[in-house]
Length: 212
Image (tube, rainbow, N blue to C red; front, side, top):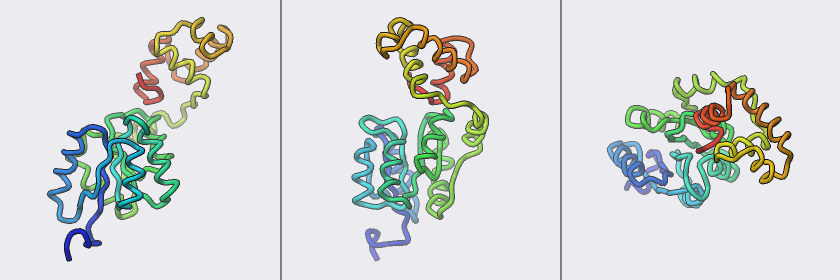
């Protein structure tokens, strides 16, 4: 039987907007007798199209991509194909991004610096119907498991702060009072356990709550 018709192979879809990452993944998979790369995509929109066409066994999904990001792509794929098995491959170690991806339906989560060491085992594990969350990722999630979630308005204010906007400018942009901006910011800093605006932005960025 030729490779195209070999059902024993694990069909893999690779989704990443960086060509070098895709090339690296392709090279790793090419050396494995039980895997084949069936398609590549550069953003979440292409990922859904490729999934519909190839219906791979395992999808490797980056998070930070243009057009449609990885978390939204995971949610769309899983909405249409509930049994889809998706492993997140990302440079982001923030717990908020991790939790977002897992809630969207990811079956595994790998940091890109561990790919050469853990990718193949993760693919085989997830293909077998199991989840793969490395200890360092699980630890990051557990550390903030009891943390309060920021409200949509608190996120709006924090993103404006990260952009260097003053309270008055934020109030004008969001059409709320300056006192309301201050109240949201105070609540946000308390939830993040931050001692000031800059510290709050840095913590939120590290945790993947906002991107700067």
